[in-house]
Length: 84
Image (cartoon, rainbow, N blue to C red; front, side, top):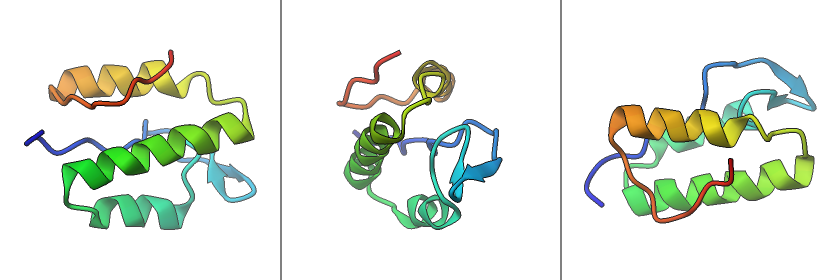
């Protein structure tokens, strides 16, 4: 796992749902935190936490396919499985 994992952001960036982005569910502070994380294993753990957050909040079924497309484009791989 040498490649950096791309940000979970899918370039929607509309903070509505109680400060959470309607595209990826991250808050502004979570976006800053992800940028500060340098180790790929920690980035992957962050994405896993984000998936749990999205499941809890609901209405984020569009994110998985969009993020998988971003991963393929950047040629990045993750150990976790994203549901589409």
